[in-house]
Amino acid sequence: MLKLLRAPFLGAALAACFLTGCAPDDGSGDEVTNQTGDAWLSERDSLYDGWPTNEKLPSEGKADAVYPKKFTDIVAFQSPVRNQARRGVCSIFSAVGLMEHLYVKEGTIGAPDFSEEFLQWSVKVEVGAFGDTEGSSSSYNLRALDQFGIVTEADWPYLGRQWTTADDSACTGETQPTRCWTHGEPPASALAAQRWHLPAGRWVSSQRDSIKAHMVEHKEGVVVGGTFFYQAWNHRLSELPTNNAYWREGFVTYPNADDKAKSNAKPAGHSFVLVGWDDDLEVQKRDKDGNLLPETEKGFWLFKNSWGTDSFGIDNEHGAGYGWISMQYVEEFLTAYVSSMPEVAVDEICGNDKDDDFDHAVDCDDSDCSDDGACSGGSQIYVNDQDVSIPDNNTTGIVSEIVVPAGGAIGALKVNVDISHSYRGDLRVKLVRVGGGEVVLHDRKGGGEDDLKTTFAVSDFNGQDATGTWRLSVSDLASADVGKLNGWSLEVVTGDAPASEVYESAQQVSIPDNNPTGAFSNVDVPEAGVIAGLKVGVTIDHAYKGDLTVKLVRVGAPGEIVLKQADGSSGQFGTQTYAVDAYNGQDMLGTWRVVVIDTAQADVGTLTRWSLEVLH
Image (cartoon, rainbow, N blue to C red; front, side, top):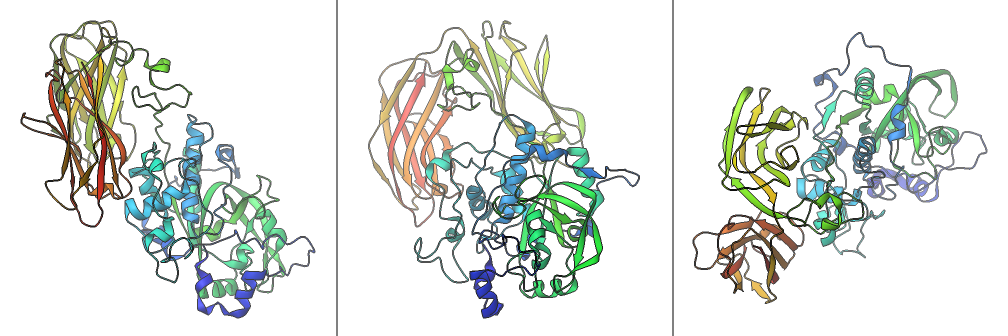
């Protein structure tokens, strides 16, 4: 979006220019292509939010480093140029552009296409930033991608226009509610879809040697953003003459004094991804009247823009939508932000009814699940839920034990780990079988990402007897960041597949608003049998899932299992499935109850259905 549309100081002439177009005064006679309404800008100030300034950022490169004169190695690892259209969400597009680039480079997913629509919502609702504006900044965008992740474009497609009063009566004027900037809430299917993440990002200096060092060392792009100068960009809102040939090539020059003054009088911003450079590229400078001067400017960054492929940069050698921007411009006026390669986990998760690894085979139809207990054999889960603090910068670390009392030949082994830590790249995690063998599960990967909560499939012990003592060893090998082991479990697959029975209640129960007692629904299990595992499926019609706490209770027995704790998150609850192993080894006969408690005011809902699947 271009917020300038609503600014009263634009004047009638400039407003008319925006509506009808302003021809460039370059005398070329070429077709004018910088009149597109899709070359929209963002608010300037939001792009600088959280930026510590170049003076406080270290140099990325060594003083004696020598870089190539031209570097375009990472252009081949870019996703297609996207189009933000008529919305001021360029920083969202640059963040997603960087994410898609890193996923292309990682290589697991052939053609990543992530949802800008979802990221816009996540930054404002899940992160809680910029709720009263359309803009955002790189640091908050990358925080959302790290902490919450986003879904694919197919899960929530981008809408290239603002909401108006036709969509919501509140969507007008300078002050609008958050839902106007996010196009409401994501559909329930998007909220339930798999989310994809990037590692935590960081600011880097926008000085040329720092950006070059990052690109050469990591072979990764850099997101930049900040002040927009209209004539320098040959934008149609420029009050100074522009150059159509420069627009077609995507040339963005350093602004002259008049361009600075006029642009700062109606401030706007833009963000995009740097993907290379050319030290020897020279472009003629211009004066305030658009006249080409004898002097040239030398040294330009290659960048990927978000204005589509029909206008800007259509003559650029690297493809329509790419451009060249002055290195001096970037150094003086733009911020720079980076992330790193994602760890893409796309193994098939057996039993969740999804094609997790994108091979068009689901669960037991996927050969990856051939050794899974749900598909070919019995499965027993052994848990140690004692939390233990991990000593900082200590090679000895901690050890947590699980005893498997009676096993059998191991067909498959899974280790589920739950570790809270503020820098998981410090951690080394090993599975040790007392009396013989160990396997390193995680060895200082993930950089600055928080926590290690994942499942490792281990085949090293296949064929051995599972009986015995197993240990999880966790050590922190660097200083500063600390954490703890919250618990871990060992899933051992042996023997024949367990039987499975499903018991269900379709009774619809209203959930009282802001009431600690809540509502409940029962199912009866009439047969006896030893529980090997439970799956609880819950369907709730409630517009604000973060209000709800959901529990599983065995009627007549002490204790309860909290399936979901109220967390303040927004969006429909829909259908959720929970795996429960706390009752393993007990008799399944009896009455089971789901309790739903609404912990906040305003939104109300209904428990419409729930089911209990018992493996025995």
